[in-house]
Image (cartoon, rainbow over all chains, first blue to last red; front, side, top):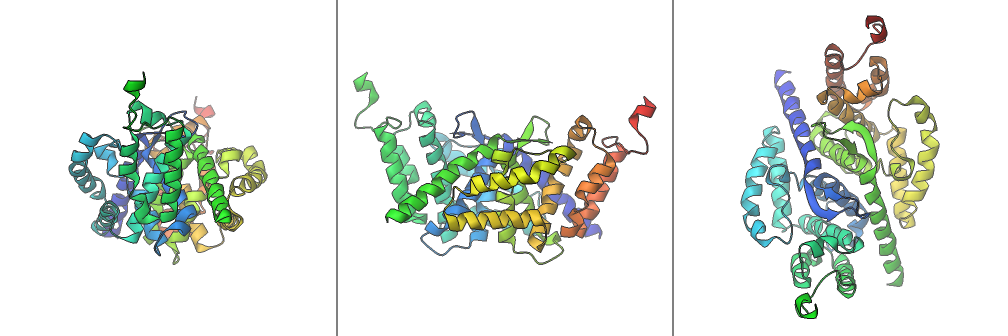
Length: 207
Length: 207
């Protein structure tokens, strides 16, 4: 009984700590442009998308594992913060920061669960299994959809170019050919509507 | 191909619409008391809790179904709004409002998925299966934990009494005896610390 008590206490400490993810802001706006979204509600939306879009996964996937992955994938941001997708310098040191953050947040859990969460997070980051490739595809697609439906504001604010967006998001095709085909259409439309600049036609020459 | 296109369009419309859940505010505060939480991030936290606490479910549960349930359980609030747990009048008409809201939000999906989501939501609300009883237990436990760790502010603001809290939350024991035992301790501590008034000792007589 004593051991079980302490196990529950550890789990409760973890649940209280994860609440901080609701205060980690991303560069992505809500679709009504009212504010930036936070990483907790982003993770929730990924879970909804995983359920709705699972039929487009190229491989058979274990949906339970994909759901677990997207639910916990950003917990490292509680200590490491959100790293903007197109900030290349910050991306380079992101890995080290997040690895330390993973020790810290998952370490609150009883050791068997700490191990499970850590393994799930590493699986997601490594993008080698069918589940991880699909989860990552959804994680990339969600902000694209939001950026497109908010007039590309976050791309414009950070001077993000077509090549950056293609580079970053082409891994969607590893998880789902169907969703990648849609993504390509979305990116094309974003360029046509002036949300995304192409390097071949820099804005400085036109102004 | 044409039919599939239209299916994906319907699914994307749904994904855009669910974003509005991030703007539905609950009475529960974040644990740092900085603001009220919204129903999207609340749903995310339930998913984390389901993963961490599944070992305390009294029955064998299909974890994938529980995760789906907590992820979608509040989508009806996009149209119906959040109904405060201890507002008894609003609770009475809640059912009708939410039923209409379910038609509206799930109706955006292709009919097979609309049916799946509707069935999952009804299963959650009916609290008859082991999965629904556990999901509901977690949905009740989460705000209790937040209320306790924010000094009971939301209880005090709405003059919520011990009996109300016991009435509303005793269903936790249908999903998990272990989590109910913990809940009873939490409520007892909340009374001892003056966060929750008992009717036997109304504050008006003391003032």
